[in-house]
Image (cartoon, rainbow, N blue to C red; front, side):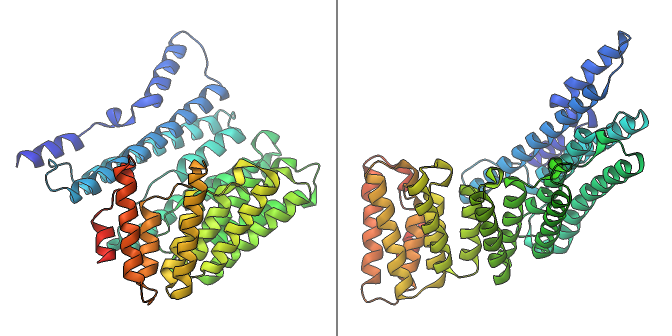
Length: 413
């Protein structure tokens, strides 16, 4: 068909066209340098690797945007036909594979020239960790294999760096905090829907412990491997994702690491101060495992710390509140519905007092309606409809983003 032919034409791009972006421009300038008799050095090639990393980000963002558009198209039958998900995803993966191959070739060349350094390996690990994987539940084993392969490549690069550093005693290629963080991040970034999340979280924590041990052995000599907020927060994120599989222990591990960060920070370690993302990850972990009381405990801790310090990085926002409300909605029961409703009223009061960071959104109201539906309370349906009326009124006053949708009406029905 014409649509199919158009799709194939869009997919039939050459390798050169796929590379594109910052990478091709950097390569063009390097060729120009060499034609003038100038020799590229470690800074030249490291910059080229960073360009590849930048293009990996760009391809990843474009792929996610295309996936979002396809979901919108499916919900709107009148939208004109677009390329299939498999073709667009395949093109993105091909693009990223070509970028990875190019990066590996550059790093090998730097090793041959004996100019590879810590920055080179760190950038390569980062590039490998940015490879995206399909998230279809219909091919979980294949997804897991692809995810594990990308992390295996990142870890192999890390150990390659470590071996060279040990064999040559070359300080230029010693692993540092960024090296460890890039590898920990590779484990933490893999989607929660892909099996093996708990094993990945354990491996990430093992790397964190390795960092801690190296630093403790020689605090002065090993400052370059001191764990920081990224190190700890990435492990928290990895355990929070693993909790999606109903692993209660993973939520508790996330909380354990959060408490460790708080203790270190209170003991004077400024570089490991937990932030909003760290707290939100733990809230989500407890929400996924049906422990709303623990989720609200974290939210209350955030509120208390913000009130004491006025540190905006600790200020609870819409996501923090909504995730806690969602935890109560998942649990169900009278008490859960009351807590969900109280948290919604708290958000509304704060917002009406001028706090724009806690404006309830459609997901917030939907979670409260769900909690009402699971409560068994005599007036639950009436309260749910009151929330629907409130959303319609707010929407009519200008907040179009709060207009109730089909899902909300269905929940009330």
